[in-house]
Image (cartoon, rainbow, N blue to C red; front, side):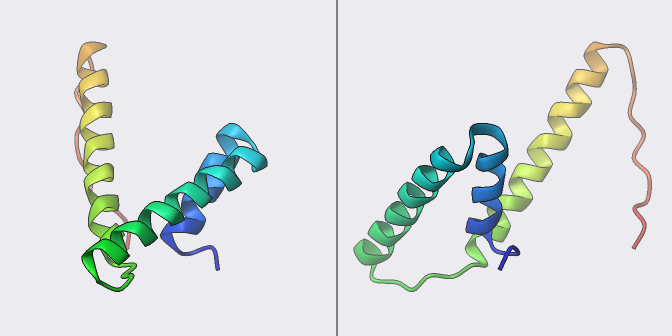
Length: 82
């Protein structure tokens, strides 16, 4: 299943660092998640990562806008296709 947070994390790290390091990074991430789930006595919920993903996208857009402004460009938002 390639549509989960952990799967996307793995593929992103694999592209940058290679398969072996991606497996280690994913293993560590899973262990940290399990630790926090056991500590807080809660269940795993994939939707928790959606808000983090949204925040990251906003950060990326602001970073691109700042870089464009430094270069003397002004970005104009457009409507996205549905």
